[in-house]
Image (cartoon, rainbow, N blue to C red; front, top):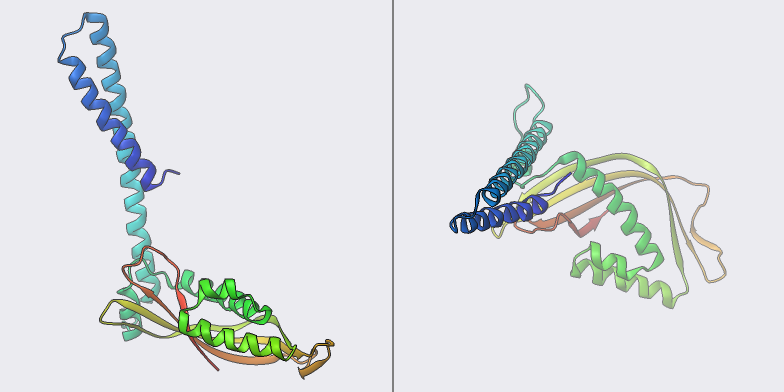
Length: 226
């Protein structure tokens, strides 16, 4: 399927074709050349109409997407909550997609933190939180400790709070309730904290942020709480 960029480029090409045809027609060519030009102009018009129809369809699909996202936030017959009102102010926000992305971010960030993968963490968290993560990672290295988390699954993933600051930065707080097995090992691989056979039910509260005007769809993690 064509993207907006594809359609824009092709529309520019069609406009250039029209301009070229006008300039050639102005030179009064013979009948054969004039017939070819007329056919070329008709083809260009057909191409323009096809591209315009495609662009209109894409625009309609986007509008429908927005309507679906709004309907998703407002169950039929229920009043709109302050939380939902705030979420609807975020352009192209889709609650289902956001929560799925939040789940993935939770897994990736936790795994990167345990492995000491600073490169991955730096892309997914803000500078202040990244600095805190680095301190813990360095302490573990100095003490020859390694952490492991085995996710069993999520019992609950829910947006609990949302706000938009005066400088148009959106913050969304998500509560994660998950089943995990967490252990800490020493340099010899001996478990010194946690139990490999014990499944913990843990509640984490994470807050993500993104500038509303940002062209990037990515949200950065800015805080974590237990």
